[in-house]
Length: 127
Ligand SMILES: Cc1cc2nc3c(=O)[nH]c(=O)nc-3n(C[C@H](O)[C@H](O)[C@H](O)COP(=O)(O)OP(=O)(O)OC[C@H]3O[C@@H](n4cnc5c(N)ncnc54)[C@H](O)[C@@H]3O)c2cc1C
Image (cartoon, rainbow, N blue to C red; front, side, top):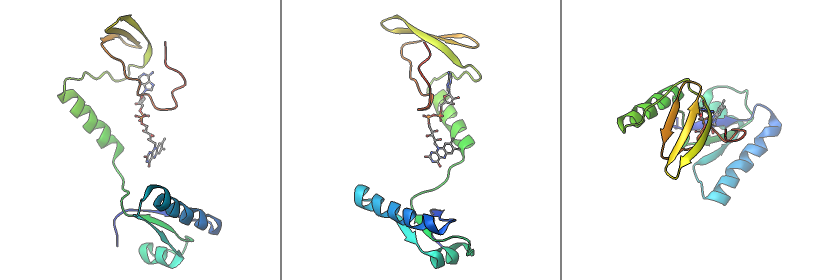
């Protein structure tokens, strides 16, 4: 049994795409740790005949999202960050060259810099 993450084809027609993906990772990025598996190799690993092959990525893994969020919060606070939960930013503006005024649903925050880290799907920066 190897550590890592299995990505499996639950339809026969998906198998080749998964194998192509491992070949692409190797050819394009030099990533050698994604291994194509046939149906028998999958079955040997998980004891099920339900899947039509797939791949094993021996460098992939899982993390616990809540533990990650809490760990990041703790690390940020230990470096002096103040965290304000349930305070969506509704707008911000530069008041001077080194001061931003940020409005939230619960308070105003003054900051030297503003980092927009609201996911790539943020429609537009609030202004
Ligand atoms: C169901 C699901 C499964 C996923 N699985 C994987 C995976 O297996 N592997 C992987 O690599 N990626 C996965 N992703 C993608 C990954 O979660 C995102 O790419 C990543 O979290 C983006 O990080 P981020 O910091 O840019 O944004 P986020 O983690 O989304 O953080 C943005 C934060 O900004 C806050 N925010 C937004 N607007 C405002 C506002 N106006 N004021 C204040 N705060 C605001 C949000 O509340 C949020 O806390 C998955 C995503 C989903 C939805």
